[in-house]
Length: 279
Image 1 (cartoon, rainbow, N blue to C red):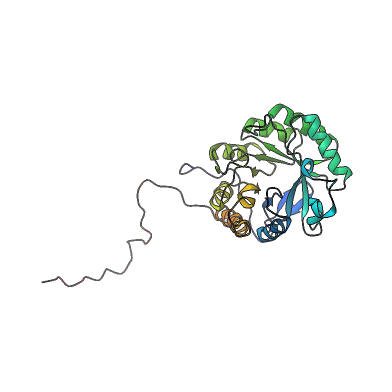
Image 2 (cartoon, helix red, strand yellow):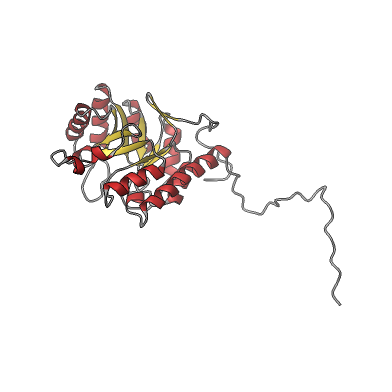
């Protein structure tokens, strides 16, 4: 950020610093995915260590035909976590809308993460199909969190369409590149009034802290934990990174300056002790 530039939103803070999305309120600002773990047991341990209240579930990738032990939904404590069904793997508005309605029929939730991809290589979102699906799902009564690019214009259009949260990618899904364009994220924060949650590309705890220090409202990640050498330990790191970044944002960083500025004032201080000259 440039020196002297004020933050895009006035921080609120306090003991009741809660994240509100639509009619839903959360204490944790870390949303965690459930894919790519070596085992369900490892997933459960990582989710617990992350402190997350919301976990995402890719409906198209749940094996409903398998036995109870192989069904992901049977390994998630729904009294502890709010499930956020997502439309990962959908490449058209129609497919995404159908998938969200399936989640509703399964009784999972009306809080949904919309993801409509443009192609299987880059996994970048299709802006036209994403906007179209958002309009339909909002009319159907869903609380829609929308995965999008870091385009401020599209973010505004999604809010106008009724999105409860816009979720710009920090970098491509699963890339671990972190926040590639913090300036666009800042513009999005100035553009929309709904919560902004960075989704995709977060690789480690410092990426999370950087994003939170920009003033975003939360982070959604999966690969950064699930594919770490020690997922449980990384989940713990991500939990602390969210807290550190949020606290730093609320505290307000000092401006960046070109030259040094003494930490201790020179006026009114005790004169320095003079050491004897060496002979």
